[in-house]
Image 1 (cartoon, rainbow, N blue to C red):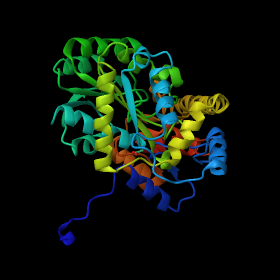
Image 2: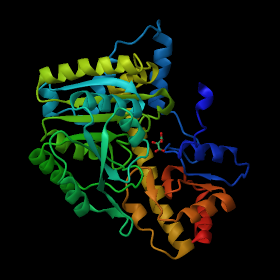
Image 3: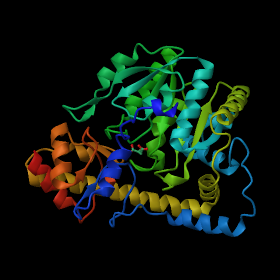
Image 4: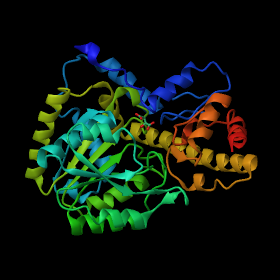
Length: 395
Ligand code: LMR
């Protein structure tokens, strides 16, 4: 039976990271997977997380299953973090959430719920979007439509095109939006533009489905959630997939959460009951370690303060790297890379052709996605000149 299965190509992101790891060139530059790396090229453990972990290890007396919705401190902390402590929806009790295995697990549970409510519903996705969105949501049975988003000529959002396309989204549809730090392009909506999307959601009745995996890595925790919060203040229903992979460095601990905004408290309870059944069907119950750590960080004022300071430094460093990269690339190539400074979060499209990307890999051991998406957080003082010169060579 199993011998009928053909071998599939490697994942376009993880396969490249593996190829980079196997490259013996000491000068290699890994700009593939979206993980934060410090000046030494290490993806660090936050001090706040380490302290929470030390306390947990000292106190933990059991590894029994978590309850189906996961760690209560984590769920409550995530609702406040994403929606804001002063959220009217939270005060009205019309929010529920379930812990999930990472941002992917959170998206999957969101998709399961959407499909249960409206089988085969259409999800409008940005062009481009994170490639994993398609198999992740599509394998549940949801259908896709695409809206224009990134405009290579301007390196920004084609908002007129986006609005034009989303005019066709209606009641019974979902619109998948990147809460901040768009993956893969780094081009985000302005607050005014979020307001227009909220007008359209209200008037047309589509349900926003927000993927927020990089909160705190664009402009800051509050700023990065402002667009999503505008929507939450206006629409009756919304699904949010949030992740602590990047903003708490809990990547491998698979720490995420699906948050549901419903018309009222009864609706929120009903959706949570559905989410628990969906989780039981797919993976039973969530992993404990990451959510126990994140729950502690979010519930403890001192740890929260330490974490926010660390995250703030990370965000500042990424924005500093963006500026340095603009200067180095402009110096090495004589071309305009100013757009990199305006983008948010870890990613940027450099605007290189597939052939140029391939040459960078083959001739210089510089690894980025075929679309020329780079992880800005993989740049550091010791590789930036090599990188800029390599790019100049292929241009
Ligand atoms: C990325 O886009 O590189 C990250 O979100 C990691 C992943 O799972 O693809």
